[in-house]
Each structure stands twice: as C-alpha cells, then as structure tokens.
Image (cartoon, rainbow over all chains, first blue to last red; front, side, top):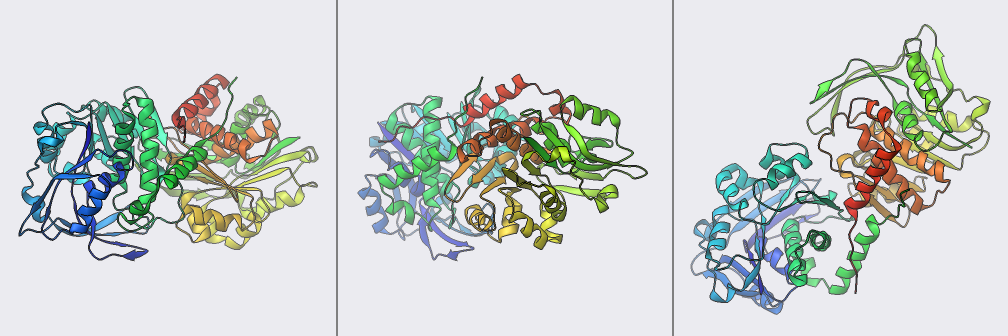
Amino acid sequence: MSLVVVGTVAFDAIETPFGKTDKIVGGAATYAGISASFFTDKVKIVSVVGDDFPQAKIDYFHSRNIDTAGLQIKQGEKSFFWSGKYHMDMNTRDTLDTQLNVLADFDPVLPDSYQDCEFLLLGNLTPMVQQQVMNRLHNRPKLVVMDTMNFWMSVAMDDLKETIKRVDVLTINDEEARMLSNEYSLVKAAKKILAMGPKVLVIKKGEHGALLFNEHEVFYAPALPLEDVFDPTGAGDTFAGGFIGYLARTRDISFSNMKRALIYGSAMASFCVEKFGSERLESLTHEELENRIQLFVDLVQFDITLD
Amino acid sequence: MSLVVVGTVAFDAIETPFGKTDKIVGGAATYAGISASFFTDKVKIVSVVGDDFPQAKIDYFHSRNIDTAGLQIKQGEKSFFWSGKYHMDMNTRDTLDTQLNVLADFDPVLPDSYQDCEFLLLGNLTPMVQQQVMNRLHNRPKLVVMDTMNFWMSVAMDDLKETIKRVDVLTINDEEARMLSNEYSLVKAAKKILAMGPKVLVIKKGEHGALLFNEHEVFYAPALPLEDVFDPTGAGDTFAGGFIGYLARTRDISFSNMKRALIYGSAMASFCVEKFGSERLESLTHEELENRIQLFVDLVQFDITLD
C-alpha cells in the first residue's frame, strides 16, 4: 500500500508581522508530504517543478522516504511561485504575486509504482488535475481526501463540485464551507456539503480548531493556544498530511479513528506555524509530537458525571 | 451562603438577520440570574429599574427563587434601555440606541440579607459600581467573578484595572483580552491579564468556545455547533451565570471543577441564543440541560493512547 500526495511543490516568499523570507520551498505537497512522512514511510508525491528547484530539497524528501518518482522536473522551466503577506490576525492574507510557470499546463504523471495507492490526498490544486489523478489510478483508493480553497470556488465551481462528488473526505476552512454551501451556519453548511458527495467533512477554523462531520456525528478538535504564530503558510496542508498519514498508518477509516487523526493533524499544524516555511517540521522529533499530543489531550479533558 | 449577582435589569430591542423584537426584558443580571438559578436557589440580584418595569418579570424571578430585595425600583424613572442590530456573522453588532435612565446614578444597595454572600458575580456594569458592591460586603466572598466589556476599557480603563485587581476570575471575550493586554496572542494576553490580579481568566470566543487559564494550566471548552443562532444577546451573561452557579452548587473552586463549570456555562449559553431574549432559558428543563451536557462530552471526546 502507499499514500499518494498530489499538490504543488513550489517557491513561496512570505511576509508576516514577525518577519519576511526570501524565496523558500513551499507548496501543498511539500507540507503534506513531509507531515505524512511522520506516520508512514510509504508517501509518494505527484507534482511538477522547474529546473530551478533545489536538488537538496529532493534529497531531503528521499531522506524521509518520500518517493518522488511522480515529481516531474521540467527542464528550461521555472517552478510555481507564490508571494503573500499576512495581516496581524494571521487569518487573512494578501497575495502579492503568483507565477504559475510549470503549473500552467501541469499534466500529472502516475508512475506504475504508484498504482498500489490505498490512501490518496488531493492537495489544493486545479480541480481538473485532482480528477485526472483519480482517473489514472487503476483501482479506487481505500480513502480519498481532498483539500481545496476559495479560489477554485470563484473560478471553477462546476469542476470543483464534480471532483468533490468523487471523494471521501473534504477539508476546507469555515469561510470556504460557507461559500460552497451558501449557508452561514456551519451545521447547515456541513449538511449541504455532505449531500454533494463526501462522507466526511473537515472544517478547519485556524486558531479556533477544526470540526469533523459525518451524516450523524460531529467532533470538535481544539487548536492549541500558542504563544506565537510565526507563519501560517502550509498549516492546512500540514494538517491534511498528518490527518491522512495517521489514517494510513493505522489503516482504520472509522469515524472514531478520524477523530484521532484530526488531533494528530492539528498537532502537526501547530508545529508548522512556529517557524517560517517547513523549517519547524524538518526539525520535529517523534518525542516532541507525542508530547504535544498529550497537551491536546489535557487541553480538552474534563470529567463530568451525569445523573 | 448565597450567590449575589450584580448587573443591569433592563429593556432591550434587538434586530438580528432572523427577526426583530419590540422592547423585551434583558440585562446582565437578568440573564445571569436566571442562568444561575438552574444550579442553586440562593441567587440574589442587585440592580435598579424604573417604574416601567413589569411586575410579571419580578414575579418570574421569585418563581425561580431569585431574591430581588436588592433590586431597587425607582418611582417616576425609566429602566435602562439598549437597542442593537447584529450583523450576519452574529459576532459583531451596532448599538442603535442607549438610554441610561436609572443607571445614570445607580448606587447599589445591599440588603443585610445579602451579607451571607459567598459567591459574587459582578456582571457587566460601570467598574466603580462593581467595586462599591465589593466594598459594601462585610466579608470577602469565597469567589468573585467579574464580567466586563470593551466599552469600559475605552472610557474607564483605570477604574477597570482597579476592579480587576480585586477579583478571582475575570471573564472577557478574545477581542477584549487583546485590548486589555495589548497582546495579539491569547496565551501572552492571558499571562499579562493574570499578572493584573485575577487568579483565573476566562476568554470567551463565541461560536469558537472558551478558554480557561490559570498561571500554569489552560483548558479549552468547545462551543456546540448550532443549526441556528437566533439572538446572541445575553449569551455571555448566561455563560457567566451558569459558570458561577455551578461553582456555588458544588462549592468547589478548584481548576478542575472550573473546567466543568465552563462546560455548564457554555451549555446554558447554547440555549440562550436559540430564541430572542431569555425566552429559551425560561422554558429550559433540567433534563434538556443534562442532554446537552452529554452533547458537549461527545463533541470533544477522543481516545488516544500514547506510547
């Protein structure tokens, strides 16, 4: 079995109230792949970069047993580049620059060695590319998790809905859930979105945690209150990678195991935001992760005996 | 022992995206008093109204064993009136009208029968009035909980800080915590505010739940995701009343019992918002409350075994 992660591998330049970076490596598949690799050594990436992409980063992926056979390197072309600036609340940001480059005509390649995919993460990307990846897998994975963003709701809503119809779990933020459903109440939004196809919906609320819905149940994973949120870039991708990574490791896609996966995803995201880019994830140890999981357990633990 | 609740008893006219009311009875002490009365029959109100205040509401207080000996009725004067309009997100509102009336020169009276006060809730009110109530109690209560709002931070910050210094628990919302501390991070804000005097800080985050901090610990109480939030007026007061009511009933002011109190307060608030004014609280049964507490338990329950 393997866990295939589709998404951008790219350059970001980030400005937050606490500092700014030059071009650093980012992208949905970078964050999600690294995050998932904490849980399983069967992570395989599907993406595309230009010949400006640093070999050192590819070596780093390999050092974490991340398979890059599906990472195309386009000679003479440049990697996707995004530049953004976060506001004080860290929940809103302005895009300063977007250069699609290799992403403009990205045609995902799935090596034969990827056909053992049982867990598929469709990271944030053009919905049609997310669909192509599903089409090119000979067997339907055991679990397909899809992440997306408001941008695709503005420019490709029909494609997006077609893609959503085919996945098991959709992860979006609260604003996107409202936009997709035209409902303000998240409970009503969840009902409408689950009627669009997915069996499970994750609504990410940033510093306010995340909600997990299926048709009959709801679960609330808190976010850990942090002293400093340094850079939120990649937090959602890191969350999704941790979520599906935990499910792939445990091979259990029940709702109760998804609750645990949500906590692990939230814990991974809580590390991601502590430094710029993927720096904190790259220094993270399993012991630090387990200690943080304990903080999440303590954070919500109370003991009420009802009559 | 008794639980004394200080705050406004007043008229509100409310407009939300879902409807509007004429003048209905509201006010911090109304919501907090009714909420607390679900937990103990020793609730005593300190407030002031005009002769326009309906006797039926005072009778209703009595029917819930709420003592109104400290509720002054000023002949020839009018009750405090507030009118406001909520925006779609229900987290922001515009004040349309404020008529102080009897509140302009409110001099709180504490009947002798109130001197058995062990639990004191200083509901949202002029900080100097909150202090006067403390001054007029012969014995320092076992626990003083204070609620306040951003308005007092703008017009009476020095008085407010003097009052905060003397209380055990402060309850404010996230925006107010940031305003009071000049810190964006709620963890940093909590540290600064706890250094101002209170031993415990509750940060209310509306639909995102509430945080409980002491010097060394933090607890996250979720909010129940609701299909409809009809009218948020009084939710914070209802929360505070449920919180201190539970503590008064159990007579246990440990941090672990405050966690339970936070869940009970959140559950009470979740009912408050379901209808206009205090209507839903007035029809609430203990069985409904216990069922809702079970929903809160289920909402955050997960089971992770760490290595």
